[in-house]
Image 1 (cartoon, helix red, strand yellow):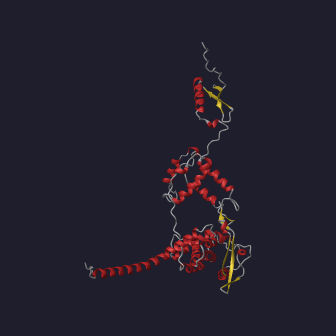
Image 2 (cartoon, one colour):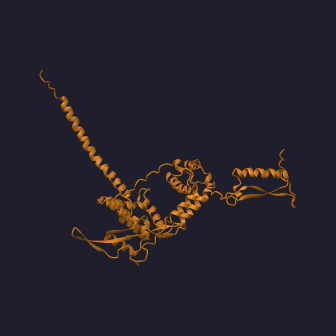
Image 3 (tube, one colour):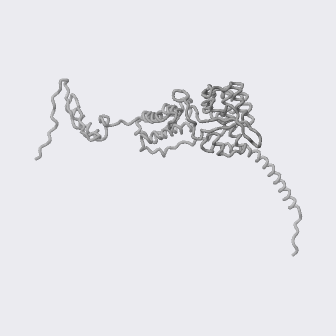
Length: 406
């Protein structure tokens, strides 16, 4: 008869009155043996705790006791780690604009609050879908816009792909972003906008002048220095007539970093680097408002944020569409080039775009506007044609029909 295995020998109590034992539990993730010390007042209860702990460890629990175990990050920690990586790659010559990081931080603080403290490997597709279907803005108390939700999701996506790659996000459904209607200025609005801007503030007028006449972005205008623009006119011959013009070298812009400080960087895209040539009357107007300074001096002291403040006030005073942004003034310059018959690729280069999409959209917008007049003229012609047809048909049916002799 085999000898029955004896139960664990009861150790002596310690000076504190407790039983203290060390038992082999299993192996760590790196293969090394795992021993754990247990203490208790009741020996029978202590043995039960040791047995239960071993079974739980074998089932994958108590991983926090494994020194080689890395606790899963929460979604908030994953966001933070990802944003810090982007921050390290930002800067003047980095892959990320410094103005991008504050936007990422805003999403981290204001989005996915129902799952931000959840371990990233325990987040499900249903968790994300539920947020996207029910998210409400804390500021307005209203459902978040599709644009906002898409921005939040498309930051979450690379975070999850990097730190929880097994989660399949292809099943996520999110509304389509509504395409913003392109605001194309009426030609008649340009003179009164410029006149109102000149009365309001000289530097705001310069912003407006550059936007309307050259199509430059506010961030590019603020980055201009006197050395970037012509100090004296150049001469060209057009149809055997002398023409005076000046040039603007656009090769930089400014962005606001996390500390709300404007920093200089390259233009928005590689196509943003360009030389713009305009009639010398533009430069005469500029120099009449702001006398030329040193080549290294910035032309404007007014920041883009302050420029936006003046624009909001002036737009309301002029009764312009409240949806009209200062940025939309660039489309006036684009419209002028469209009306002049410039090719789309030339317009895109002049506006600093890497594609012809915006130029094409302006074309479409103007064509639709002209189409209304064409349709009206066509409608008159069609009405006259149909009237003539009815008269002709009536005259034909009133005439007697002559039958052929049989």
